[in-house]
Length: 333
Image (tube, rainbow, N blue to C red; front, side):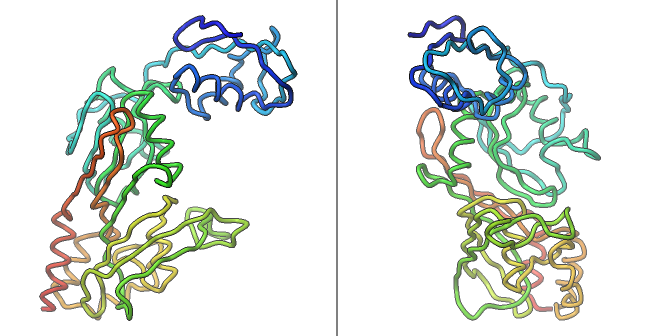
């Protein structure tokens, strides 16, 4: 038996015994169409917002007894502690549920130590105003995937709780049960004997350099798959299109480096290839120095709208700095 007691609250009796508290609340919230992520539910339990038989329960993994009475209430989202900044945004698509941005290289997605201001989140808070997701407990843009600071291209951000939940589930599932397409343009060192391939290798933290990721043993890494195809060969370098089957931190950079083809301009995973720049034509060497970053661009993004079900697909041409490098490689001058 259950009775609704508010838009983000309910009382419910637990049937059966032995189920984890967080899993039970996740199912109960979904039945009531409350857009609450697993992370949000866990945080609310640990914050003391859940009562079991009248007592505060702070352990998400606590097992419920048969007939336990659960009281759940999620406080309304707070205003974001991150301040909005009127930064320029290249908006590709926007409705009341989500926004698709073409991010320039050099823009950090989320505030972090050393980048408290001037981020995409600061810009979105200013741009979107009060129509933002509160699924994390703070009213802010719903970041469901990221691009590295020095990677340019397409990024989708949720504006509402329901869109955040749907997009988060889609990206966590890597598009297995719903359409999700992510393609990147990358310039890599060296040539290929085959026109396409797949890298299927787990990724985890580098055992010695903790700021880096690396191909790791299965027990230490997370499943990661990248598909690539050759678009154009330039001798010392190649233009490839990489399609993500999973979305791990630095996935394309790590996977291509593991095949002996690190990205041009990648100081982290291609440091040992700096001397190869001498093999490039003079114009390409100049363009690579001017690029000053890894040659990676999120060129295509496709997904099913989490609210309307409409299929959406967006394409972004390579930015000018990357196009100058490609043109210089083509000229071989």
